[in-house]
Image (cartoon, rainbow, N blue to C red):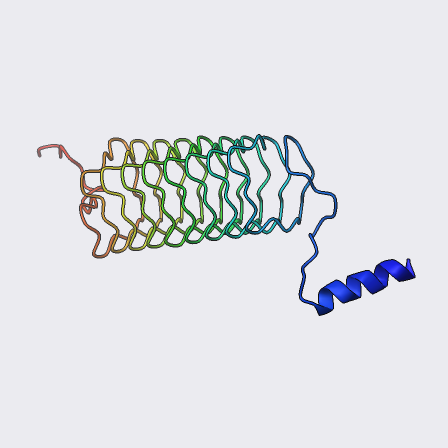
Length: 216
């Protein structure tokens, strides 16, 4: 035990970081909560149902990785590469994905309440049926993304690019769309009750007005 403490002290002194969870081998249903996997190359790996709660995945390469049903609650995925990764039904509650590349990611029915997506690339991403309440997509790029039937109550899209996105039947109640760009987006049956739309391009400013008022 004394020898182990000496080795640990030596590593810390030299600036070498130890993994948050020793013995974590990322794979299907692996238990890697709190692990330090920053910068790791995990592209194309089978990681479905893995537990990465609170893990450090900054700058990790997760392109084409299978993360279906993964627990990423509170994880740090800042600057991570997630192009075409599969995040269907994954738990991203409270996770940080600032500046991550999530182009064409599959995120059907994922749970990302309270997650951070500042300046994140989500071009062509499939987020249909996702739970995004209280998440922050400020200055994110969601060009051509599929957000059909998402729950985005009180979600912030300040300065975000939602051009040509599919927003049909989405719930944007009390969301913040200030300076967002919705040009070309499909908003059929979407709801915008109490939504903040200052300086938003192509936002339905008259959404709460009757389209066919009854004549007196």
